[in-house]
Image (cartoon, rainbow, N blue to C red):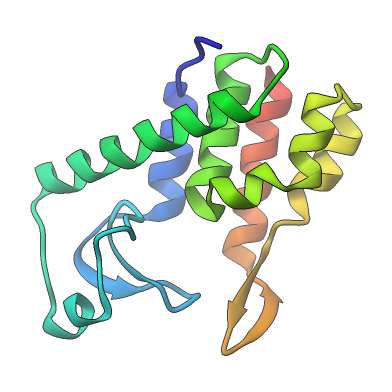
Length: 154
């Protein structure tokens, strides 16, 4: 598969993740910085008020995207458009490749299920653990719909 994350998908990722040059805890309590970067950020970074530059935020985003693009390319077994690929990269950016790899969503895509069935499987991923309880979050509900809309647009 030779897909690329489309500009529309990159726009969704940036808008959904937000942009903060100072380390913070996301609504699920995960240390985060830049455009939703979590891999190298610690709770200590949040407590100390770690900051990065704009160019570092862009670099971290590129590193994160490269890993996710490779993972999505390996997981999807059917031909898809760049916008569909990008929508899946945006999904994985938020939830991780592990969640995508075991999801009913991926199974439906790979089995060429109807768009309605794919949409149903997509939008159910609107919950996060908040204080130990799985709750729908408005921001995630909106994000999942926007991602699916892009996937559906082909």
